[in-house]
Each structure stands twice: as C-alpha cells, then as structure tokens.
Image (cartoon, rainbow, N blue to C red; front, side, top):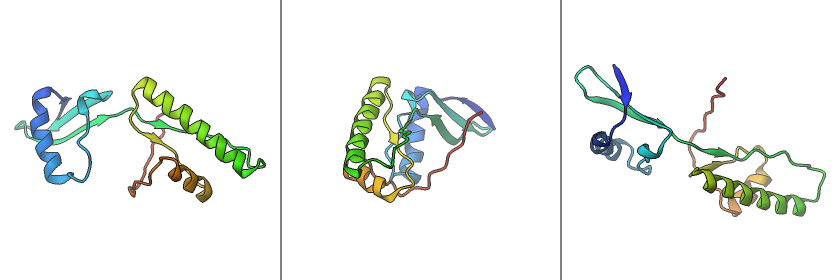
Length: 125
C-alpha cells in the first residue's frame, strides 16, 4: 500500500467511490481539510481517501445549583459564542457530547441535531 497526499485529479475517482458507497453523506471538502490523503495499492488503484477536518467541541461546566431557566439562557449564550468561534476559524461542525437528557433536548431545540451515528473519540497524546 502507498499513502500519499490527495491531489485535484483524485477528486473525480473519490467522488465516484463516494457516490457508490456513501451517497447518504455529504461529499467531504477534502481540499479544505488540514490533511487529505489517498491510500492506494501497488497498481495505483485507490483503496480509500481520507482526511482530517477541523471540528469544534463545545466543552461546558455548568453550575447545576442555578435555576434551570438561567442555565438554559447561559447554554444559548455559550452556543452563540461557540458558533462565532467556529465561523472565525473556519470550523464547519460543532459537537456537544451531552450526558444530560434535559440539556440535550434544549440544545436540539436550538439548532443541534442528533446524527444517529456512533460517535467515537481518541485523545491524541
């Protein structure tokens, strides 16, 4: 196998692969990613195309002793600040990993969407 940087001419074949196997997802903006790459076999056939995209994670510590309405307003303010930050640095996706169903419902009411995908993470050391 050979790993190499993705180049503009690769996009047509990558689009074909995407449309054949992953058409339920939006086509990734590979050339806007931090790193876009191709892994191909010895004959130059693409095995996979990948990339690392910048995403944002809203990390909040909430004083749960406060009034729920006040907390709700603070969550909206935090969402606006997070959106501003993402726009400023060119991040397209903002994630909130929530273990409180009340918070989750509130965030969904204000623009977050459950995606139905399994979310995995890996802390880079």
